[in-house]
Image (cartoon, rainbow, N blue to C red):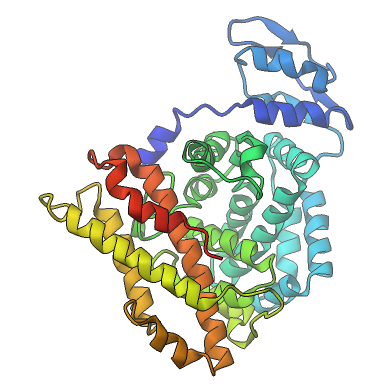
Length: 429
């Protein structure tokens, strides 16, 4: 057992946000206590067979429960293996890209067979039911991620006996999000550094929920814990690197990101994402997804209005100059860029960003020449815009990582980081 998993066992699994979702679900469908529900002090809160609805929310959140709520409840019309198989079939029937992806992976019937034969613990069924009922957008993301992960694993030659674990990991990878305040997860909400801590703990929460369930594969639970880790150490919750990230987690991680981009029907952005982030994702998994999705044959989507590349390149130039100023300050500290230094990650990330910029043929000190080179070539200009789109995401992610690591930044003042953080968080119009 790795240190991060030992730490994870100390994270509590219950939250009022999940309790609210369960009790509100009881207003529209039957949710029943499958056994007596007790507070940790021995107080009996509800008897076996009691109907659960929003009226019980206050009672169930006033006390610490003796057992997790999802282990003592059951629901009618639960999302079981048969229901999952039907839902996946519906996606494949309605969305050609997933149907084609699965067909290229191998035997497309294997997904349905594998899903229908999953052995789902009652806790997982309840979680999936709550997700389907109260968080349908997360449920849809989960199902599509499962299709992508399964197809990828199938194409990579993962043994048939391990495919159910891949499927389970993908289906359960966002269970922890149901313990996060829904307002934080709303796409229109600007997440603060403090709120981001709750987002970053959701893989740990999911792992805690799953690791001790009877017959749930440990490899799948570990994949849930690690699905936001990245091979270069830039992920969360533990900043694992390279071989520390399990193969199954690498598959689910790539599928999770791919689904989010595919939902926008922006295949060029997906290709650019893997090219720019090649140090973060497993190369075999990324190559398999490219092959399955035939990204090289996809034309860019020009329907959305594009930001002025000159403005965006200027911003990128200003960012790099802000970094050089901070770097000069940091280098006055002994071994600031040494591997063991809390600041080493920043040197690594910025070196990678600068390398990507130079590989794209961009001279930060000569923006005009870069634009002159591409303005008469629509294909190159489209690729430049896609690169800038993905670079924006990369910079925002670095800002989040700085926030996440701020307690360990060795006394570095907020003022010293101000110029770089302003550029990383800047909204370019």
